[in-house]
Amino acid sequence: MIEHTAVLFKAQVSNLRKANKAATERKGRKKNRIQKHGSLTVAEGRKLAAQKAARQQVEDERRQEAAQSGVRQRAATRCSRCKEAGHNSRTCKKDTVDTTEH
Image 1: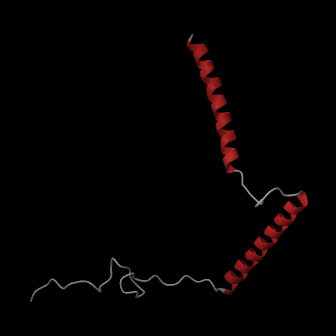
Image 2 (image 1 turned 180 degrees about the vertical axis):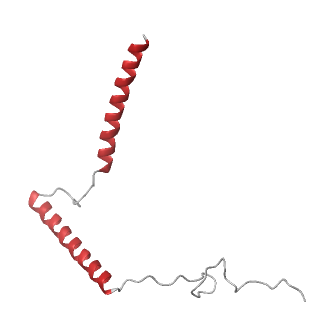
């Protein structure tokens, strides 16, 4: 009886693993939606896909040029209290009160 139950459990685990793998693959697929209104013909779909690819290529080239020229540089972080660079609001000296009495 125990062996029969073990065989059933193995089969069940195998089926669950297959189902999990299939679900994971479905979720992982990239979803591109090019349809906006109504139905598209094959030619219209190809045209939209080509336009999207061209826009993506232009954007990639622009990013590469900007990276090569060093245009994109991150600005120095600033304090949200005094707007000065070099420290943050936790370490800002603007609102500190001198508690030492002489």
